[in-house]
Length: 195
Length: 195
Image 1 (cartoon, rainbow over the protein chains, first blue to last red):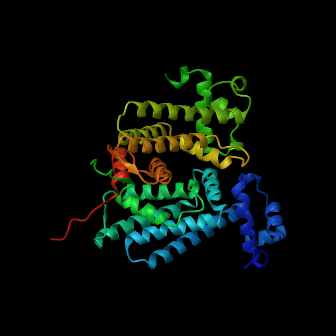
Image 2 (cartoon, each protein chain N blue to C red):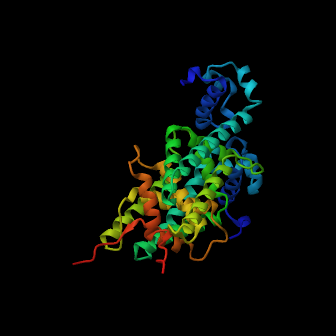
Image 3 (tube, one colour):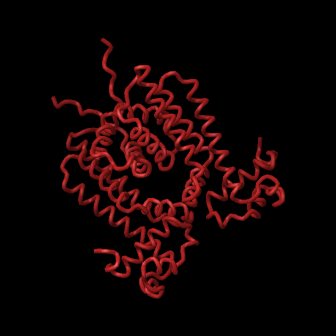
């Protein structure tokens, strides 16, 4: 479905994603979003009470999409190693397909009030918990043992974030496979013994 | 030296660090910084032309401190493994000692104009390059081989960021040692063979 034939709500969210990702919150005007979405300002207010609500909906929308894609991808894999690989692949694919999403989250986090839970944080904890539960499962099904699951999941997911952000594009074909393989078995290769 | 006897410039930077880390850029007023620093507003303008310049000075200051601490720590170590460990230790220690610095950088990045290079980015590339050059050095001195230096340094440093941000506190004693050890040799431990 092209954006022109999309329902107004989707058009509004798509236009808002681009704007919130590139401007400061207070600089984004409902007028501009209406213009970008090709709808009247009144239409926006029929769906979203105010700018804060629209912003929250954007993040909620992306979060739901990511978690659903990850859950579906994890479900079809048997080994925990492969489940980890598809978590990485799904995340990289989503962020690559929605180039404004990363900045949107960055903005949301920086703009958060200390009193309010940053909306993406829950997604983050969900993914961390999923990875930790896979480590536990791997041990149960005698696949591998992760000695420090908390710290290890942070390294893997923090590493994933850096790859999404700064990694080489186009992505290498076996990127996620390699990362998980090296994460489990080491990024260093022993030197051949001197002969 | 306590903050009260510090030179005005340091008092201003310390007060500004707290404010820029907790508020949106446009919400931070020079008046509030003056109040926080215990100096007159005129004093601030003697050191910094405007809010943008003060903000840039803050990040420049933190960047210089981090790179100097890292360089000094790396210099006294011989093995590349230990050099990697002290890079992690130094970074964690600095961010733990300056609890507002992380948010300050987060804000600076989110607030950046797409046309302007984000001021902390250079620091980031410097640390990435340092880590990559240590991988090269490790191979030269036959310590270990990293097969994909670019991707591997992103995983290690992205992981470090996540540990700084979300890792358990107080930090475990051998945290950085463990991270680098597992990074090189794998986060998984082989299961003992069934008997």
